[in-house]
Image 1 (tube, rainbow, N blue to C red):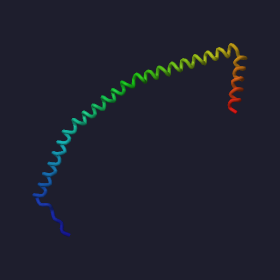
Image 2 (cartoon, rainbow, N blue to C red):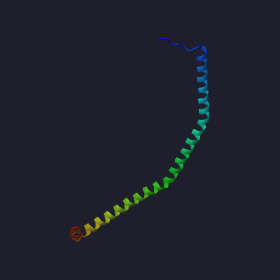
Image 3 (cartoon, rainbow, N blue to C red):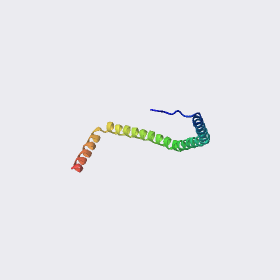
Image 4 (cartoon, rainbow, N blue to C red):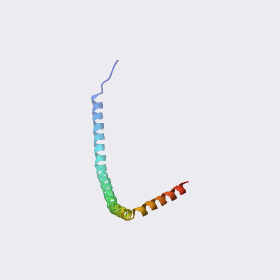
Length: 106
């Protein structure tokens, strides 16, 4: 088998082409880097605006859930006081409600 080695002129041309390719990549990188930075900056600003817009809603939801828990606890306390004050009335009411639910469920 006979192989040929590249001539000195061919390797010089190959090196020149590689250098040209490196220069082209460097130029593209220089042009793309500012655009990427602008895009990243715009994305960060958008995320910050979204977070600022959502923060009041999150605070409102948290406050609303705390109020709901407080009202639920107050209602449970009131019901417990009524049952302790009138246990027979509470028992009769529970039996009556159970009877009605049983009739409606049939």
